[in-house]
Image (tube, rainbow, N blue to C red; front, side, top):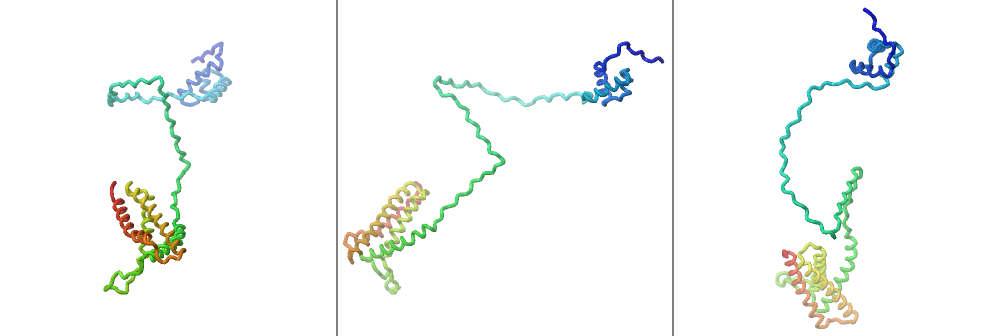
Length: 258
């Protein structure tokens, strides 16, 4: 067996590196120094240089045989009929340009903004303010009722003779209570329009009558009058009947579906 003859013109390292890479790809790893010397017929120094080049440059991945590629699945979904094509209407020359709406920025998921529930207004100051007004209004109407013929009566004679009632209290209870209730119905906004209009004007009228009654009482007392004039007595005596009629009408309108 004769040794292989070496070429008189040895190949440079740059020409031997591709062959060494092919050898490494076949082996799946970097070949040893002796394997490079044997396969490429080079000496020790060139084998060391080739080995250094292989370790510095990443090796190509060996080919992987995964078998035949699967055939693409047959498309079974039928395309929907797009229908007839409708041409857009012509745009006039003086028509304003169409501006695309700007997208609404999405809320930052990191921030949790919750609106605090609104607290209703307290009502106890109104009660505190209403107490002195109630005393003044009550005393004024009762005093005016005494000047206009309202007084103590026995509503159940022969049944309960000791039971007595001062009819003067019917004035503040009727007029002022109806005025407050009609004002509430007007401002609530939860009634039909006809009922709201009636409540509005009747509340204003009731409050004006209450104010005039207080003025009349204080003027009569300041003048030393013990008996009211006939026209004041006439008007005051009609108030319970008027309050009854307005209350019945308001109750009917509140329950209507107009």
